[in-house]
Length: 314
Image (cartoon, rainbow, N blue to C red; front, side):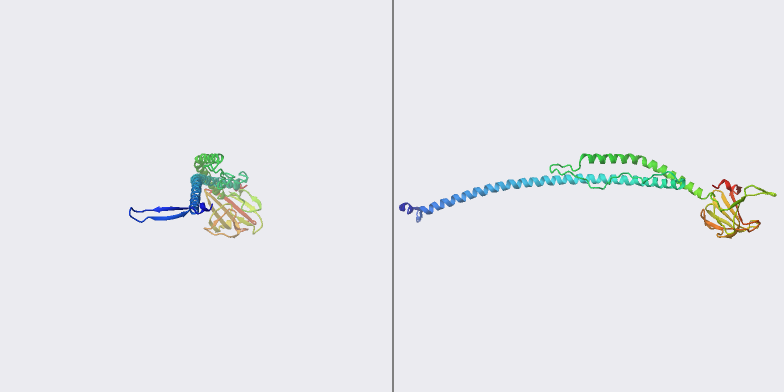
């Protein structure tokens, strides 16, 4: 055993033919240690290379997964952009139709105000669902379409319905506008037609009643002095002053050929050129001029011709 341990190996190195020979003595133990070290280094290199290969494969898988996710996100952005665009188009069409519906509701309220009946019990609405609500997307990581077929079909159905409604809406709008204008003209006409009683009291003389050598041209309503007198329709005062046997007298022109006369007044609250509204108090009842007691002499003229006031009163 001692001879083996002391065994030495000699290594000769000769660089050139005439150069000095170099000798290196290496013991058996040193040579064995070097061999073991080389084996360890080689094994470590193999393990390291294997780990590098595995790491590279995992890295490639991660890169591929990231690329797939990026592609998925790009599809999501495209789908969301398309969905947002379609939703905005639907909202725009809905607002247009809502404007038409507001016109319908306004006309409906106008009719109800005039007739006292009819109309809708509640406001009209296009849809109960909020078009701006969040869209629920599927969570499948391998799926690149992000809203379900039912939602897409629902948008198609709404869009088609709105298109159909928008086709007829302009024509309805023109008809509605004509109806509105006719209604406003009717309201204006009714407002300027003497259709309300000018005073409360007792009728003491009627239209066309014979009095001596002439016929009574109006309606006499008797009440106490100071009883309010109101304009039977909207219009402009064209006369306010003393007029012989009529005493204090007011004449209002209402347009459409209508004029009304209020005579024997105690006080007058309006003057020539004043604009009055239907129902405004224009004076008080009195006993001025040729009168046998406190009363209002009321006339309705159509194109300057006296007409029976009772034909216009409710």
